Amino acid sequence: MTAVIDRPAGTSGETPASGLVCRNCGATYPLGAQHACFECFGPLEIGYDAERLARVTREQIAAGPHSIWRYAGLLPTGQNAQTRVDSGTGMTPLIRADRLADRLGFTAPVWVKDDSANPTHSFKDRVVSVAITAARELGFSRIACASTGNLANSVAAHAARIGMDSIVFIPTDLEKAKITQTAVYGGTLVAVQGSYDDVNRLCSELAETDEFESTAFVNVNVRPYYAEGSKTLGFEVAEQLGWRLPQQIVAPMASGSLLTKVHKAFKELQSIGLVEATDYRVYGAQSSGCSPIAQAFADGTDRVVPVKPTGIAKSLNIGNPADGPYALDAVRSTGGAMAHVSDDEIRDGIQLLAQTCGVFTETAGGVTTAVLKKLVESGQLDTTRETVIYNTGDGLKTLDAVAERVGPTAVIPPTLKGMRSAGLL
Image 1 (cartoon, rainbow, N blue to C red):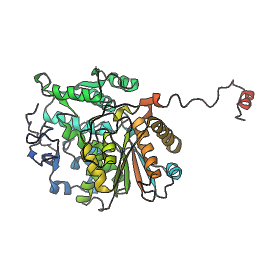
Image 2 (cartoon, one colour; image 1 turned 45 degrees about the vertical axis):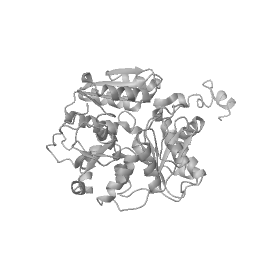
Image 3 (cartoon, rainbow, N blue to C red; image 1 turned 180 degrees about the vertical axis):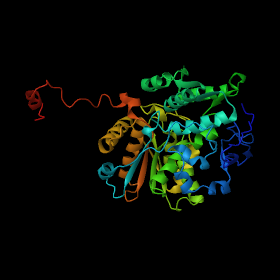
Image 4 (cartoon, one colour; image 1 turned 90 degrees about the horizontal axis):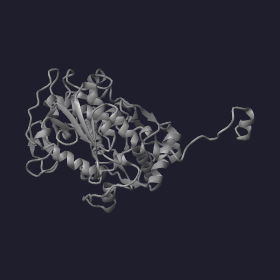
């Protein structure tokens, strides 16, 4: 529904959020369950009170929980520890990838932020933790989403954890592993005959019906809160690097939201003095089967033309990406670049990350790793600058992508002769 719901203040701390702000025209609204501007229909995001943000110190963060909620003072919800939903999401490994750096010719460190270590094995646990906390504080009784897979897993799991009803909508052609992982949590799972964009359109319509008045769609009516969860990927990297920013980051793009929110996190940390103000570059990665943002970058335009998604990177298959223009702005304003890669390059990227870092990524991480390699080879990414790449999900979710490429080195009888005949002795 479009009606604004008053949000009660947390009892254990004041939210730094000051309201909702239109990203297009700048119109402001009270905090509530609203995602579109009444003036221009542009998307809304959370605005913050600079003075309240500036009260947050490194010491306060370090004293917080070992999860994304250590950054509650920089988020729009969850200041009341009694109402926040904390499944232990966040503080995932930041892995120094020296062998990957050597393989690609880096003289500066390369790091992998491995979000496959989250409870449902993707970065979506961050955004869902924030969204479902906001939903509870706003008085919703059911949680829902449109998803390409990882979000479905996370919404169903978080709802099960706190005993909230859930209804999740997915395309019918989703990877079997992601369908199974969503269904096992026991919520309502609806497979829609169409693409993710069709699913998202249906959810937008449902959010406006009386029958779904008590339902919070994490990526529709409470999207402004949901999107802020991705900022914690920026906050954590800065903290794990000793409260400094990397010089370059490479992030996968579906809607483009993750990339823009990491950029927002870095800017906020600089503005409130938690890190030194330094230059950094933002790079975006897409699959060639669904690359409307990267194509707009290559064409030198601000107009992101919707496409019909294809290819194996289904978690990135959003043909009409809502945050595309803002991702373009983040990349261009920092002097970064974008690229897209084929299915075979994605498979190569999955194997490259596994064989140099011991990290088995899903197809989205294969996209990111392959784009890192491509940008290095094209000279668009500087190998003398410290770089962080984001792995957003676990390879066990997309086994089919590489199943035919890998297998036993040899099949032998249980004898020394068998070892010798296979050339292993």
